[in-house]
Amino acid sequence: MATKASRSAARLMISPAVILLLCWMIVPLAMTIYFSFLRYNLLQPGNSPFVGWENYYWFFTDPSFSAAMINTLVLVGGVLAITTIGGILFALLLDQPMWGQGVIRIMVIAPFFVMPTVSGLVWKNMFMNPVNGIFGHLTQALGFAPIDFFGQIPMASIIFIVSWQWLPFATLILLTAFQSLDQEQLEAAEMDGASWVSRFWFIMLPHLARAITVVILIQTIFLLSIFAEILVTTNGGPGVATTNLTYLIYVSSLLQYDVGIGSAGGVVAIILANIVAFFLMRMIGKNLDA
Amino acid sequence: MGRIQLKQVKKAFGDVEVIPPLDLEINDGEFVVFVGPSGCGKSTLLRLIAGLEDTTSGSIEIDGEDATGLPPAKRGLAMVFQSYALYPHMSVRKNIAFPMRMAKVPQEEQEKRIAQAAEALNLTDYLDRRPGQLSGGQRQRVAIGRAIVREPAAFLFDEPLSNLDAALRVGMRLEISELHKRLKTTMIYVTHDQVEAMTMADKIVVLQAGVIEQVGSPLELYRTPRNKFVAGFIGSPKMNLIEGAEAAKHNAHTIGARPEHISVSGDTGTWKGTVGVSEHLGSDTFFHVNVEGFAEPLTVRAGGDVDLHYGDTIYLTPDPALIHKFDGNGLRIE
Ligand SMILES: Nc1ncnc2c1ncn2[C@@H]1O[C@H](COP(=O)(O)OP(=O)(O)O)[C@@H](O)[C@H]1O
Ligand SMILES: [Mg+2]
Image 1 (cartoon, rainbow over the protein chains, first blue to last red):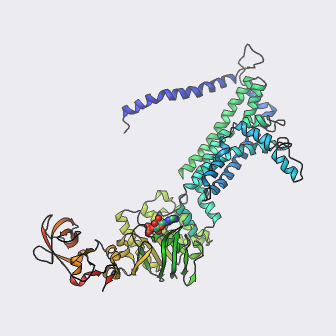
Image 2: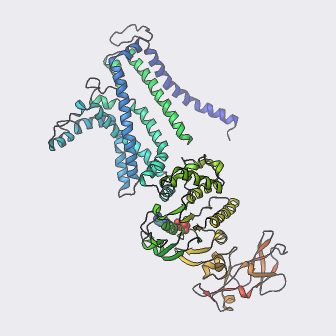
Image 3: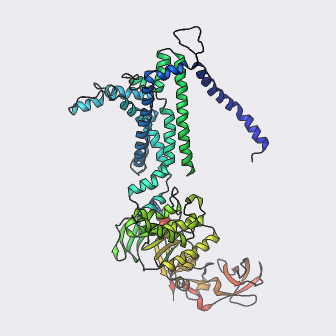
């Protein structure tokens, strides 16, 4: 089919798109790297001299840095754990034949369509607010002191909000994976004497492995850069309790007007994301072999 | 042991009655084949026996004990599925070991039985491969291996050969028959292919629309089909069924003559016709003959070297002792 001529024609045809995408990516990346080596503070306009690794030095030694790293990992890890386990359970549930299946499936997917800023605000003001929130009313009705979610358990609260947003995505992908499982395999396992738990463990879970890695990979990429939910709820606080890497970069470059350090943080975030992606790709590659 | 009795077993999906109440007895060690056209309820019947479907009413007994409410695992039956239903992420060894692992058979015993099954099924060299790396015939054998190691009371096969090519099918047919001779375990085998039924069965159960049309040995069904449906279904090529004036001469609504029971001649005979399409198989030749006054062309068998061609005149004489007669309801008249 693909002759030499048609192949080179094809290359020529797609080159504008490829070049455009490349510039789209390369230009900001190059500028970020370039800025990260300058002393560039918006409060001190004028010359911005080349300072080598100084910005990186300040970024790494910033007392918030290690906290931000840990927070990022906790946030990503927590949300991944909740959404994959929860997603599997929801998918199992939705895979059962039941009345009103179509409507229920759409409702389960709905949170995915709510903008992060909106959902952050709704949870903050309508549910988790100790005075006006529903949770506060409920705990009070039961005779307990209301929990100040963003004061007492800020990280858990944010993990909860983000999980709520991403659960539909995980559920959807895992549900389609469940539906592609050959029913005869389950029946064969049933004949072979496997209990429901064994069938889940030995047949369903291995079948889901690929979908689970896809869920983890895609979510990780997005979760590393969680920002809006933190900005509208805790502002990274109390202290630095909910400051993740993205938020720290925002603090350095836009609150402290230090473009240089912000850019250095950006580069660190890019490297971190690539390391994660590398391991995830290898994981997926292994699963795809199977 | 593997004696299975169905008593007034009925199955309906919603309002659709797929299997009207049905009685059937399968004796220990028998090779029973359910045969019938696609959609007649063979798989459903097999799945009722396996316990993968609940009966709507009636009871199933295995070895004299009521098994109607038992889950599949407790019935001691093993099933080989049409799609093989191997576990794709497990090696052949693990696939075969799976039922034993579930039954918590000791490790050494597992190894022993796997080795035996692999030996018997020519799988020894493939034990560490995944099902995806095997050919269709090998997958089929893995599925059988997984069934054997459980040492079940009976094997259930649901069209196990329909995904194989013709040559492999003949080979596997022999292997399964041999397996039955060796193990002497009850086997229930579902197929829509009457050749498989005829070659393998001790007892054939002919089904149509969920109803048992006849039960008997292959030769019983061939010699004395109980009705027109069985007559047309068993035997290859199909029996010629003739209605009208010719049948009336025999005091029947329909008469049937198998292609191999009609003799062919170039100059004299009972029926005169013209040769249509002929199929030369080397040993035999099948002629499709248009006979004057008959609604449909007849199929007849002649020797491999009968020299007749398209459009030639041909004379046919049915063997009078081997003509089957059926009444208006399609039932056999003796
Ligand atoms: N789960 C089901 N729900 C509704 N109808 C079914 C179901 N399974 C089978 N049937 C119907 O039962 C009939 C017999 O099916 P089956 O036993 O699979 O036939 P066979 O194996 O002889 O080809 C078919 O008409 C089929 O449509
Ligand atoms: Mg079937």
